[in-house]
Length: 123
Image (cartoon, rainbow, N blue to C red; front, side, top):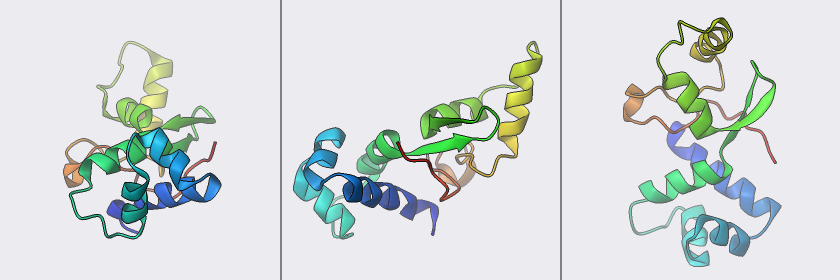
């Protein structure tokens, strides 16, 4: 699975748990948009849809805190400056730098919101 396919996995998992209608409402898009995106036949660019799907359904397990966090929270922790004034925060920051669940770092592959692992947590 490539990084570009991960959002589709999140979308398909969300639909399998609930319905296309509920997922569309949560993403604030139409039901046909969800259907076409799942079939990989969406005629327009999917950049905005990818971001919405990842923010809504993309969660990872943080091994350092043993909590489930969203991709955006994980990316924020990873991409911040090293917290040199706080030993506990520095420990967390160091763990983020080598975590297998970490999102792509800002600047890597031109995207900072996609998860690098297919290991995701469910609600």
